[in-house]
Image (cartoon, rainbow, N blue to C red; front, side, top):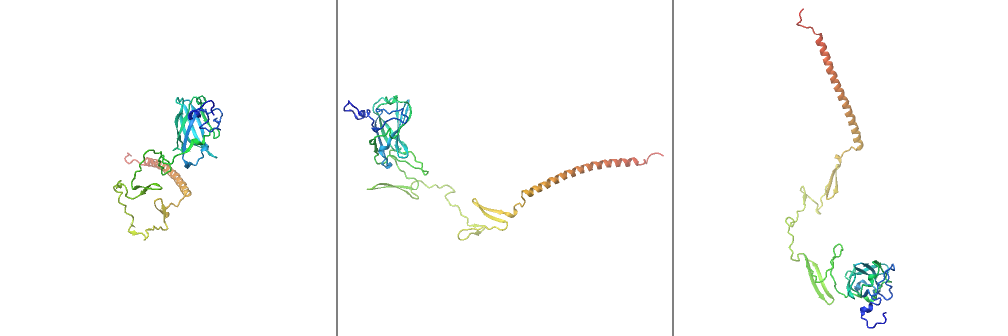
Length: 318
């Protein structure tokens, strides 16, 4: 409590005490090297949806990042088992105007939270060490009265995709426009206003797509080679000893088992060896024939020469 001063304005009074932090908070980070000055935070207002079912006494300043050009502050909520970030604010360094107001913007899943943070001055906190400093619920707990229930109503509109991915939040005036074959209607009752979305064939002003060749249905199969199916639409294809019928991807597989090769790898290896031996014998025979041809020619020349030498000269004298 301040002493020796009277009739202080609310925010100036807060600059001399812990508020908006709880009176029993030490304001010292987990390392013991950073202390939040009294004149840094002088006001805080954080509206939270009652649907979250959260205790107002479990909100605290979880993190302060001190950089040369400013500060980043994070407000979190502590449960018995976990801690979840709720909102954050960015505060520039060297704020000259006293009691400046900054936005506390929600962090998913609290991204619809819109709060306010009042900074008394930054001179004192600027003398603290730079870096990222963490706090606990016991050291930086917020006063419960700084957390209030958000006013019920639609703050934004968001579209969730078929895969479950949320889209960006839409604010301001939003119009729902009926698409092809969709009808929109609204009704008001004492319980509230209802928007009814109905899927109706032919509803709307968009023309049907009449693409050439696609609008007419294709003819169905009635007979195969003039043979109709059974009354329930079935058609049977039956195999025999050599033909087997089996289903295939988008079709029927017909296999001739009698025409399949009966030889395996062992039989083919034996045939290959026999062919290699036959080729070797052929080469031997070809070599023999060549040699025999050469000897036959030599024999002919020798015999022919011998016969010509033994003949008598018919025209020789005496």
